[in-house]
Length: 321
Image 1 (cartoon, rainbow, N blue to C red):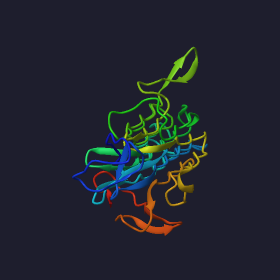
Image 2: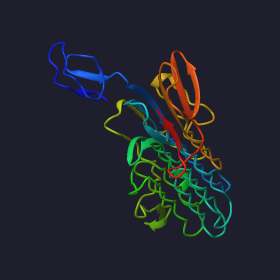
Image 3: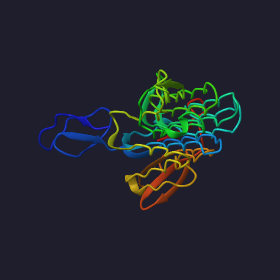
Image 4: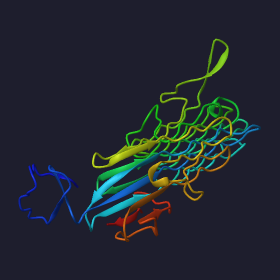
């Protein structure tokens, strides 16, 4: 990390921690440090279950990228998001999709009489952390609401980083079962602040059926994004909403070192009755290999470490500088 040593002119005082190279007249950088460029992609939400018509499509995960200066021997943990599971249906009280690994909220059960589609689950978060310090978190997309009665599948699922209501943890909350004959609510995405799930609660007003705010909303929220103040050059791309009904939120892109989402870890949302896609984490630095962890390759004078295996905070992959 850069230190402001208060240097004036071209000379520097001795530093007991090691040698330094002068980068400008006021700032010195330890010569044994190097810079990581990091991309984290949140998981996509799963689509809602069908009932004659398709359930709503899930939203895509956010992308958060930036740079971090590190010293050799630093241990980082990598959390890789799972995609949210698809809602099932049609059926009476059929289960919603399972939340994506790393904090995705489960989809809500369909109503009990007679049959509808269950809610899709939220995608998990992807991120880089060390101990209790989080450096980057990319939130997962919300799941899509189940079809048919009620309005669950008529409300767009929100992409990663887009939030109307949040939890007090990294986990998205589950969607709510429909009371009566109707689609289950969608699960919220995992993130620095987990997204709230969807409450598909019917009420009647002036002879018309409408959707109540139900305490925390008729819209499932994506998971929150975060970057530590030590991260520089931050770029945030919020996830794409899940259009209704049935079409998934498209995978996002980033300008960071020409990143193009791959099929294995794009963070795309799932179409109706289809699961969302898992996320990924990519770390690169200039020169020959120095770090340990992930799938490693080299191109254009850089070394890349790619992490695509889904892993939560209790079973995270590691990266050692």
